[in-house]
Length: 371
Image (tube, rainbow, N blue to C red; front, side):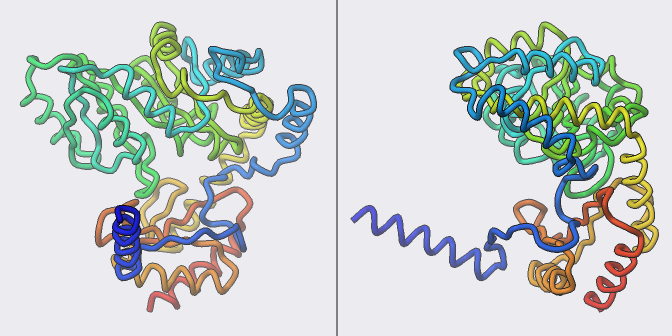
C-alpha cells in the first residue's frame, strides 16, 4: 500500500541521518547559555515581562485574524513607527517571524526577468525566498566583492532589476559582510541592496540599530530585515525601508496578507526592548567586550559575538559538545545542512550574562576535550 511505502521511505531517510550523525533531538535549555541568540539578556528581563503581561491583560492572547481583517491593532502601528525611527527609515512592517519576513520581501519584489545575487552562506530563509521568487538566482562566493563584481559585469544590463541579498552578520560564520563595498557596487550597478540584520540589530552602531548604521550606508539600503527574537529578546521581525516599498508589501506580500497577526502583547515587549537598548548602551558594549575576551583566549582574530569553533566531522563536534554539556555549559553542535559538509562546529554565542571566569573555564574544557 502507498502508506506503507511512504513509511518505509521516511524511516530509511531517518536511518541515513542516524548513520551520518545528523539526527537532531529537542532539548530544553540547561546550563550556562552559550547557544541562544538572547545576546543582551532581554528575553527574561523584568521590564519586558511586565510590559507584555500588562498588554496581555489589556488586549488578550490572540489577534483573531490577519492584519488586513480583524487582526490589526494600534499597538502594531505604534511599534512599526517606532522601529522605523530606530532604523531611520520611512516605515516598517511587522511580521511574526524573520523567516516570513524574508519570504515576503523576496517573493514580492523580484520579478521574472530580474536577477538575485545571493551570498553562498545566506540563511535558509533568504535561500528559500529567492527560490520561491520568479527571478533568476546567482550565488556568489562568501563575502567576495571582486567575484560579485565580475558576476554582475558578466550579467550585463540585459536583465531586469538586480537585487543583492546578504546578511550583515552571518549567523554561523560570525563574520561581517563588507556592507560599504556592497553599497558602492549597488550604486554603480543600480542594484537594490537587501540586508538581513538578524544578528546585528540591537548590538552594533552608536544607537544599536545594526551594522547598516555602523557602516553609514542607511541611504544605500533598499530594505533591511530585523528580527526581534534575538538581541531584542521578543519575537517577530520588521522589514524597514521606504514608504512605497512597505506599502507594496502590505498590499502584495502573501506571508503578511494570509498569516494571522501575532499576539498584540508582543508589541509592548518590543517597545520595552527598544527603550532598554537606547537607555542602556552598556549592555551591548559588555557583549562585545566579552566576545573580544573569548576570541583572544581561543587565539582567534577579532570579530563578532558569534564565535565558531570548527571541528569538521559531525561525530567530533557532537563529542566535544557532549563533554561541555556534562560540565554545565549549554553548547550545541551545528552540523549540515545548517553549515557546509565537513565544517561541523560549535557555535558559541556570547551574551551579556556571561563572565570572564566562565569563559576561562569554557576555554580550558574546550582545549581538554579537543586534545
